Amino acid sequence: AMSTAQVVGEGETVVMLLQDEDPFCVVVGRRLEHRINRTKVSTAPILGTPHGSVFELRGRRLVHVAGFGLRIGGEHDPDAPDAEEAAATAQAAPAGGEAAAAAAFAAGAAGDVSADNRDLTDTNDAQQLSQSDIESLKSSNTDGQVIIQKLIAHSSTFQHKTGFSQQKWLQRKSKKYILRLRIVKATPRTICDVFFRKHLARIWSLRWDTLAQLLSFGGVSAGSRVLAVDGVMGLLVGSAAYRMGGTGLLLAGFCGQQPHFTACERLNLSTAAADAIQPFAVGAVGAASAAVREGGFRPRDPERMLRAPPASGGRPGFMRSGRTPEEEAAVQSALVEGLDSLLIATKYHPLPLFETMLELLLPSRPFAVFSEYVEPLAECFRYAQTSGKAVNMTLSDTWTREFQVLPRRTHPTMNMSSHGGYLLTGVRIVTQHIPEPGTDRKRRHREEMQRVSEEVKRAKHAARRAA
Image (cartoon, rainbow, N blue to C red; front, top):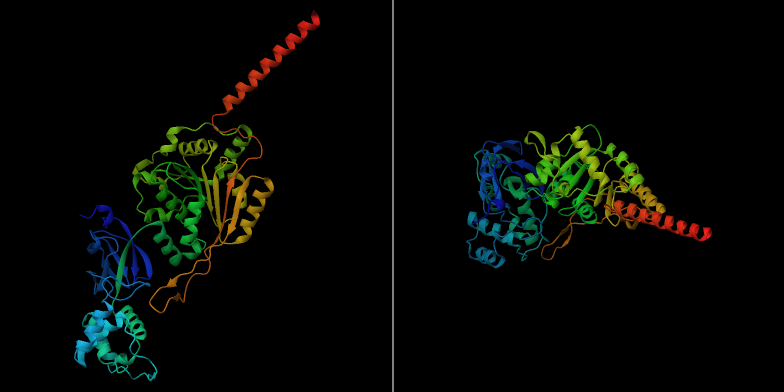
């Protein structure tokens, strides 16, 4: 039996891949509709199906199908015909007519390479079906597979193409006449891919591989206390909460009047993971940083490591305003107790935030700063290096390329992103004594013992002089 976590549930947000290429987010419900390819369709058929299911848009309905049936996205579809089986079908099929077209369809999908293109000339008259014939087939709601088979049967050049050319032709016609969608689970990886394609300017070119490095080099883990300044539509905060799994505390800093963590709503966070997020205005870090410089870190409250202050009205934690007196007091208390991780991804120059927030990071804890441009991170690198507050620093730009992996034609894809932003990582150190949490009492006791010892010595010295 399949668990409920593996199937799509009511009110869940999923990522739809249109023709396995174009991603977008959809909220699934029995009474919810979504506009797909300028057609409003109900999302009810998706409920209860496992993630990875494929649907075909037929009229105004989504129909669950077995698979794409063609080689999609650089891999064999499990429902595509086997090469030997397709070749046998092509040989056994009678010449001419729709049966031969069906066999050619299977052979082209399997990648038959027995023909070549040396005698083909593009005169634009190879297709015997007119545009009006094709439009009449479409208007009569003819299945897309049938339309493609008719195009093959009335093509005078398809049988003479190479297997590679046939497969590319089939993929092109399938995208035109067969509209299929794959349902994918909403994760930080898939949501970041959606935002990268749809809202590139609003997330400042933060690509999924750079986001993964932010979380990894930033040391985000369950039970940790993380400070994340998010200016990328909540991708950083939502991904960190997703990774922490509802334990620890995530202080989500925002610039402006209120937080805008759109990605948190798309990730289907559990109640515990959402409540671990505590938004706050970044201006609050100034007072906390000054307090740490003067008196050191305060001892931690174990209860605050497990949960954030409860949200009011049953709202998730990332929807808090962060400006109530109770929330501001809780954030200040958490900041002066020290942080385990520091993450910054914002459109503003990161140096002022980095200088202030680095003081709140406990020694030997990691930090990661993202920027769309390298110059702001170079200034942060220079500051941390000259001040002696960080080691093991790295300023990097990830070189990511997507490859098509197919038999006899493996190569980089023709269109891909060339830039995913820059990343500064390092580890916080201290060059002077800053008390760790819980050491202030020991320091005062040691100073008191030294004072008593000096008074005893002075008393003995005075007694000897009097004698």
